[in-house]
Picture 1 (cartoon, one colour):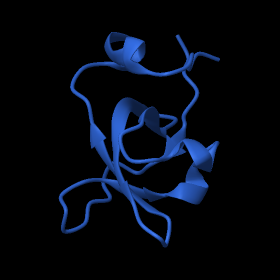
Picture 2 (cartoon, rainbow, N blue to C red):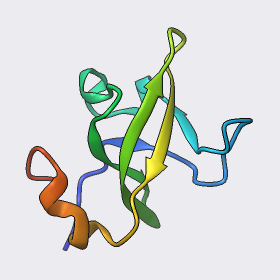
Picture 3 (cartoon, rainbow, N blue to C red):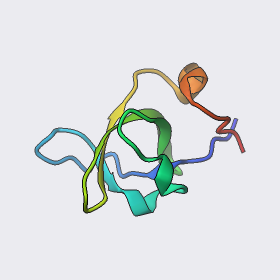
Picture 4 (tube, rainbow, N blue to C red):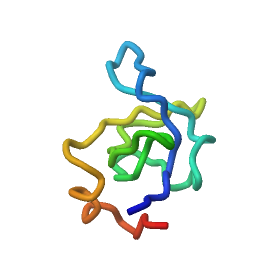
Length: 83
């Protein structure tokens, strides 16, 4: 099954928070990137369901990966993510 990525993230990017981060403008719909939202993040080779932890005024977004596969966590998403 294919899934649409809500926000691009390189999983190797971590800062002093210990969390991977991205920029809100890397999102398909930046308005959905709000703290507490559950979305799909990643890139073509690796995706996961994540919780948006925070978004600062400069558009930096910290993400927390949920354990399990996207298929196992799909029910947590607020809208259908399949393509």
